[in-house]
Image (tube, rainbow, N blue to C red; front, side, top):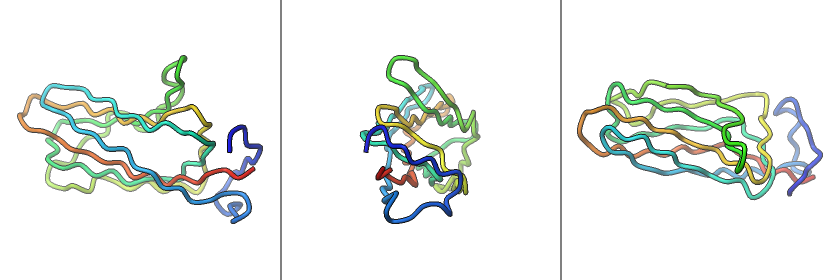
Length: 135
């Protein structure tokens, strides 16, 4: 739904008549010395309650930033800034929040990957816990 009116302040307010779980993923890759932006654009209003970041071949010193992007205004929110990549694990972190963040249709969730000089292709995936607004 676009222009939904439901405004929960806690996940405990989620019911099957006001949201549907709609998990989505954002995939990308980045080479040494590059910065890569990968966007997931919302086609409906959603509530974000968390996610899991996975990186294959991450290098110590690489960084991740997570943002909300407006198509003309640019960055309207940044909720992870220069998060250091763990080089010896594909699993990076799991975010779980009890308070939902409303992401309106037309906005994008962006992963910014900043790679160090160390050679190699880094592949990443962010699995978002999204809930589609029904009213």
